[in-house]
Image (cartoon, rainbow, N blue to C red; front, side):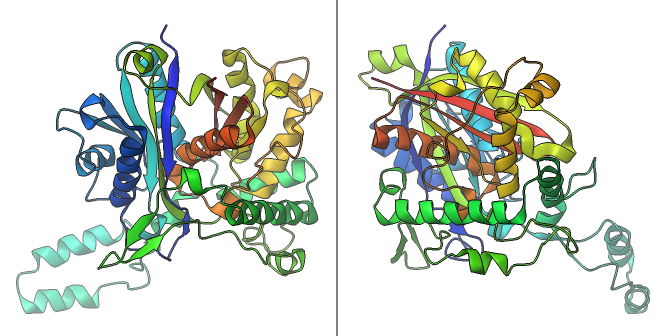
Length: 429
């Protein structure tokens, strides 16, 4: 079968929700990433067979956002677009689908990634509002409209945050933060452990930003009505973050005895990321040198109440499919939805007991050395634009393999609803 490879990778800056990208819709973030990707790799739009993008907060004016982004980015009308939604793993899912299509021989070159503007996820009215609006529409006289207004229950009509609604699991009834609290108790992870991990994320991301490590993977974005302001780097990492400041924050999800705070959780962020996926054979025949091979990938399911352990299930399967071991990985990127969740995954991957009871294996996949895990920080500092994060992890992992001059890495993330996704990359010689 053809071997899927990555020819190019790019992302926008990751910007805290409500700041510089608040007026830049997801389709525009995606357009910028895709255009920069194509221009930077040196391919022509006519060579692209398909565009596949992840997106979770589907904009009403761009329901199939991959198709919209493709046309906005200058791809020919003959290039179809597919939008995928696997919650937090949507961007990675897009890359996995592209890899499978290339491996099956059904496509030669695919743009894959994700885009999300969390700032623009709307407020929504409750279902109880629908009958009232029907009554209002049918009221033909001023008297009947006035009667409808008088009958209105204003408290029940208050809009709700669609973002908060989406971050609560409809099956187990828990918010994502409460699932992190469950893991903290299960694995004995203290508040101090979580805050120390969060501090490290900010320190590493700030250091990476200061030394220009993120420069090669970021496409600057011009914004504003006159497009004179340019955003060139991530807005999220805090250079002055301290344990003292983190310790002052109150638990968000279990206020009495919880340990998960806004400081040791991911930031809500806007951004986009994209990669070019082709086969090794297509790249050679068209004169392109691959950056990395996609050795294997996997997606697994688990209880929604323990969704944060998704990487601990998906990584071993992806490694098996790649024919490698965790010890072969020079770098490991695990999305920092919550500090407790990442720490729990590290504990689980190194536990023989977890391997036997949860993975059906006699031995643990192995330990992850701290210097190999998220060496440039993660979502606690950089943020988590849900539909784009999986692609951002791939872009960052690929750039890290090149920058550190190492061979292999795995990127993974937990998924709301109780899933985990992982992908193994091998740097091309």
